[in-house]
Structure formats: structure tokens, C-alpha cells
Image 1 (cartoon, rainbow, N blue to C red):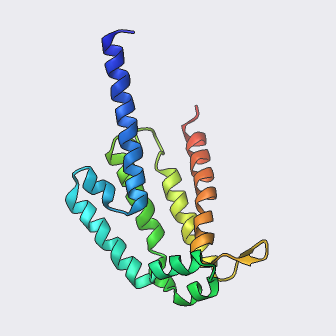
Image 2: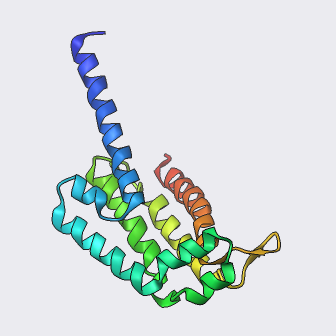
Image 3: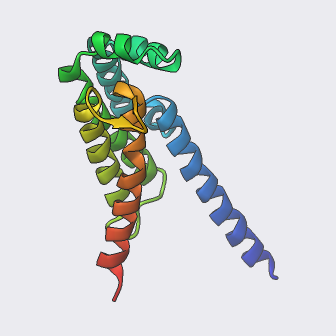
Length: 164
């Protein structure tokens, strides 16, 4: 292996690490990745949107109650009109983080993000009624499960649309 091949491999690994880091910071809080990547205005905008939606939806309290198993109390605290904005903001912020850090170069690479946002939103809508194995999962756990079909359908559709 020549020195140029080693440099190229190092560069690819560094880029991959940057993409992964970007997505993880965006998972932690929408806007963090944008700030990390030097897009301050966009990052601050995402942070402000996230905080407004979070406060208006009572999201932190909903999360806390859900983790403590108090699903009925979590549902009672939920402002669904505001919470339904959260998945699209969240997944768009992740998509933007992924794309801004060098990912998303292949066709239709946005589809897993879009479909995850869609299914999480649908999960919010059904979170007061739909039971799984006899348990009401509520406005945190059921929507989180929506990521699974979102990723499966998004990646499958991407594969179908990009196959020749």
C-alpha cells in the first residue's frame, strides 16, 4: 500500500467518523450538529424550534412520566397539536446533519429520514389508543417504534429506486 492509498483511507475514515458524529449530535438535540459544522444560524434556529415545540408539547414531562411507566399521566400532559411537529423537525435536522457533513450523496438517501418522521408522527396520532401486547405505550414509546418501519420502508424504497 502506497502512502497515497493510506492517506486516502485515512481521509475516508475521518469523513465517515464526521458523518456519524454529526448524526449522533443531532440525535442528542436538533441543532447541535449544525453548530458543530459551523452553520450557526441554522443550528440556533433548530435549537429554538426544538425548545419551543418541546415546551409547548410538555415533551420533557411526557418523557419523564413515560420512563417511570406512568403512561396515562403522560397522555394527560401531552399537547398533541404541538408534539406532532416534533418528528419532522427532528428527522429533518438529522437529515440536514447527515447531508451537511458529507453524507447523502447517493440518490434517495433522504427516504429513511422522511419515512421515519412520517411513521413517528403516525405513532403520535395512535398513541392514546393502540396497545401492543395489551399495553398502552403512549406518546413516547409507540412513536419511537415508528422508526423501525420508517427505516425499513425508507431503505427498501431507496434500494428499489436505485437498482438498475
